[in-house]
Length: 220
Image (tube, rainbow, N blue to C red):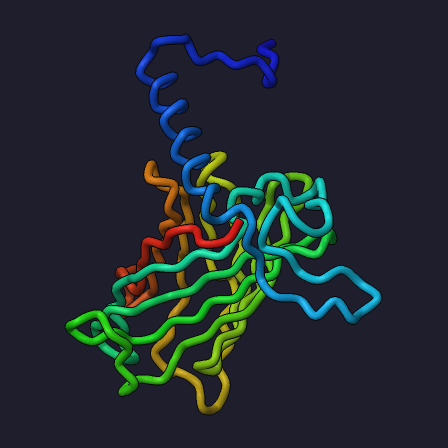
């Protein structure tokens, strides 16, 4: 039986070179992001949320499989939505924790015009929720968004740097989107150390691309 703690990468191999390059890139990014954090008032008798693993309470041991997600990420993406049509968007995504056994999640998306500037013709889309993961690596993601929809996703780590989820329950309010079908999401760290994600939705009986984005780390 192989010791999982043993480094099986052969020195000088392509894999070893890639791993070293990834470590070097992460260290370079951390020069700008390691000292930053989301604001906290510090006036409550419980710890503030932190999106920086170097600051605040220690990450709960039960969340180690989700550790690479913790941070603040910003970038741009593309959407092909039955609700709003095709458009480019900017996004800020926050994964934070407070020492307890869950991650808080917050997403803000805004439409971009052809020059890449904010286009106020469409309302900002916001999501909030929580990620939990069981001892068997079963991920639970509860999510509510500003369009008027509530979803529960279940999934599992695809590997140490990627996580796949599928919605098992989608509820829409009376004023919410009628055409929002169940979805699948994949989040993953790319070779550039950016966070990429893809959302597919059931549209007209088949799964189709709905939203995707590539985000760079700005905190953590």
